[in-house]
Image 1 (cartoon, helix red, strand yellow):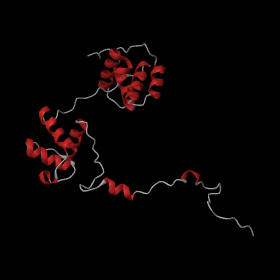
Image 2 (image 1 turned 45 degrees about the vertical axis):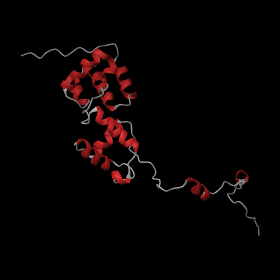
Image 3 (image 1 turned 180 degrees about the vertical axis):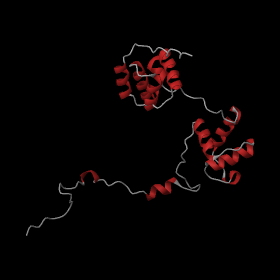
Image 4 (image 1 turned 90 degrees about the horizontal axis):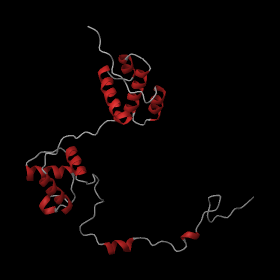
Amino acid sequence: MPMPAPLPIRSDRSPAELRRLARHERDGRVSARLMALANALEDIPREEAARLAGMTGQTLADWVHRYNAEGVAGLRDRPRAGRHSRLSEGQQAALKALVLKSPDLKRDGCIAWRARDLCRLVEQRFGLSYKESGMLRLLHSLEFSWQKPRPVHPEADAKVQAGFKKPARADARYCRASPGGRTDRAVVRG
């Protein structure tokens, strides 16, 4: 049985131009795809061109289809949707409101939300079990930072703390070191 003819590759760019684009490409996968196409345009057998780029012949054929349809932009990976959240939109809104409200030590048993606290809360309220890493991804999708703010004691007094701060010296701008790195030392030559 005769082999089917290889797919034609659009020829608006030369193999040399595809190699130049591959050299300047920041994404290594796109660069490998450009090199495979350049090799295939130079009459290297498709299986060999694919092997040199670290892919199979079928994968190269798929990239040829995308390159023919969309050009170099078609060689980039498309964004993936990923798994949908197990919390509904309403449950996510309720979780966001709880996080924004801040925890109460008596009610929630903590003074700052941690991922494990929120996992426990979601399981109690909504009956869904989350791991800490999944909770952090969920918080990120709800536009929260993963970092906690610096803790503040509930009975802290800003006025008292301001009294402990050292005032800036009035002559600080005139206090410069000498070129030798010493400030107020006398040089005695002997």
